[in-house]
Picture 1: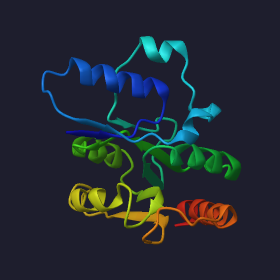
Picture 2 (picture 1 turned 180 degrees about the vertical axis):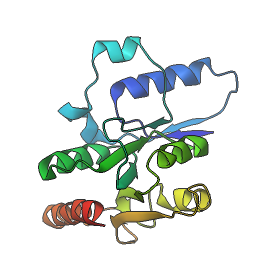
Picture 3 (picture 1 turned 30 degrees about the vertical axis):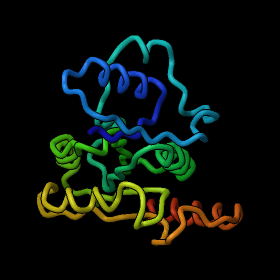
Picture 4 (picture 1 turned 120 degrees about the vertical axis):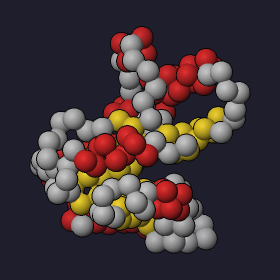
Length: 182
């Protein structure tokens, strides 16, 4: 099976096209939150649809020799980009992992190798015991040449949401602070 969490409409389109053309007939599971439908930052231009292909990992080529590399998946990418712009941060690379399973190990290792002195973080909006982190942590133990991938997320809970909008906003704010201060 293939499990993906595309971050743009064009990436979703290329994923569907790749899956339809793939000779191996296997299930495709796609995680897409409804909030991305209204998110202007997640829009794709027409040329994004007509050119390119599905990328399992989308590196941040705007930052060279980063001191912090944040790996993330899905909507949290746009929150991280907005926070980085607000802070004026120029030493943090934000990398989108578009395919969760099978995990693109070589691509993740190649991105980390471009930033040999960087701290490596996995940031997710979901609680620690949910979302991609449990799977990612098991499969990335030995790929970063002795460096560890550390998690930044909400605390582990039985429920995926707090049920209170104000608490959710406070948790989201704390998540961004931890991502850029860790």
